[in-house]
Image (cartoon, rainbow, N blue to C red; front, top):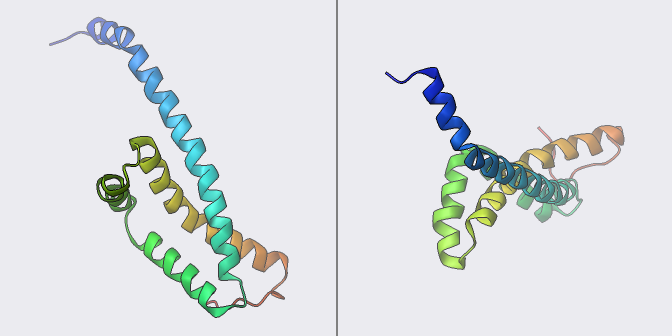
Length: 128
């Protein structure tokens, strides 16, 4: 059975792998959140638009994205769309995370806009 000293020796000898993974995770997080905020703002504005088709498009996007698991969305973008359009791995992952975050951010921003206008802003599609 390996000892703790062996564990720490292996950890110390492979620390560069963990540092590279940490940097990649931070890059992926920052990029996907920035893109997700832009997507969320777009769909929040579409949802509160007085043009009914925009509200329906936003509702469909939010319903589909929030209704499917994130891992399914990542698989669809990584194995499906990246094979068709040759998207690099990093951008396929960040786009999947951004689309997922965008749906939740859209609802947060829509609620914020609705609350800050004290309900004077009437959405195209009645809220439940």
